[in-house]
Each structure stands twice: as C-alpha cells, then as structure tokens.
Length: 256
Ligand code: HPA
Image 1 (cartoon, protein in one colour):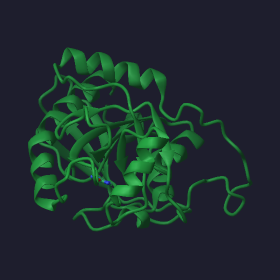
Image 2 (image 1 turned 180 degrees about the vertical axis):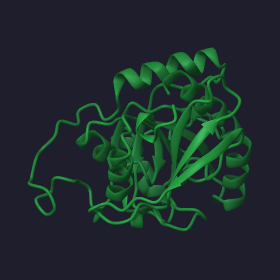
Image 3 (image 1 turned 30 degrees about the vertical axis):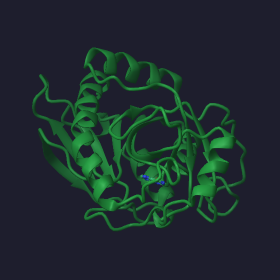
C-alpha cells in the first residue's frame, strides 16, 4: 500500500468534515488539472486504528479552511484531480436540511435520487469546450453496488442510516424560502443541500462510483416554524459528524 496509485477510495468532505480523527496525514498532493485547481491539496490519509492501516484520499470541497461557497466550488477540478490520482470510488459527505418531516437533525441518510435546481455551474467535462460533447445516462445517479456496501457496513457498525430519499440541490449560499421548500416537497425532494451537483454527474462521466452520505443538520425552511440558525446547524454538525466518521472509517476499512 505504499504506492499512491494503489489508493482507490476518496472521501469528499463538506460542512463539518474538514478533518477526521484517528487518521495520519501521509502526504498532501497538490494537483493541477486542465480545469484548474481543486478546492485544496488532496490529502492522502492512513487509518491508524485499522489493521493494515488502509489509505484513502480526502478532499474538503469547501477548501481548508472552509471558505469556498457551494456555487463557486470548482467541481470539475475536484473530480479531475481525484481521477488523476486513480480514484475509483467516492464517498461524498453532505450536510443537508430535511424536507420530509419524518427526518430529524443528526439522522444519516443515503439518498437514492437527485433533483438539480442549480444554475450556471460548470456541470460537465464533455460540454464541447475542453472535451467534445457527449451525453450520459444518469437515471440512477448513485452507484448501486457502493450503496449496497454502505448499507451492509452501516448495519454492521450500528449506524442506523436511512437508505431512501431524494436530494434537491439548490444554488446557495443563501438558504431557501419556505415557498421554495414547499415546491421542492411537491417535486418529491426529501432533503435539501447545495453541493451534490454537479459533483455526482462529473464522477459518473469519468466512471468513478459515487454515493452520498448525508447528515441532517436542520429542518428546511418552513418545515419547522422556527427561524434556521447557524448555531443549530453547527450543533447538529458537531453532534452528528462523529457517527458519520464511524461509518466512513468502517467503509474505508472495507473498501480500501
Ligand atoms: N438548505 C440548503 N442547504 C443546506 C441546508 C438547508 O436547509 N442545511 C444544510 N445545508
């Protein structure tokens, strides 16, 4: 496991997952791509607690420190950087609001579908500018086999993750209006966040298996009557990300 090119698993971290405990930084890979610079160096990490010390890559999508707004993230550079390092599987971590009233802060949800409400983002490698135009099937945005693995590992690790849901991706950085969330609920969205797209489709375009592990950090606008505060979001992140890390480490141990 000493060759960097043997590492095939990457975690893309979002809000609240800029660092991980129990891991050693082996190297920081500064990668340039034809689409520009990724959000930060790609961290090569070693899972110290697990036999064989499996290695994986970690890329904080908002940069380190957390400073890049969701609509300004260079998603193409992030995915191209991971591809150039030989990554075959991406575990994306997303902090989200809940639209479905059955879901609660600190729940971990692995969604099955996506609705993209974003605009103006560079959403394809193959848009006819840098690479020739191509169209891709995206009926099922997440990799079925990776989701099966997440389910099995989550059960074994006692993580109680929920395996259903539709992630509606909004532009940000502002949160939504209550009317926008009502419309999204009518569309079938059960979760709302700002970062899943175009990350998921770019991974598909370069044949990297991709699945998202969402941590609910607030009820979405109008779902509860209360104003959404950053304090409640950070509290849920702080209290919930520990369990997400348990799941991620068990997954790296299984997949790496
Ligand atoms: N809306 C959009 N993105 C989010 C939210 C939300 O309520 N919570 C965390 N990310």
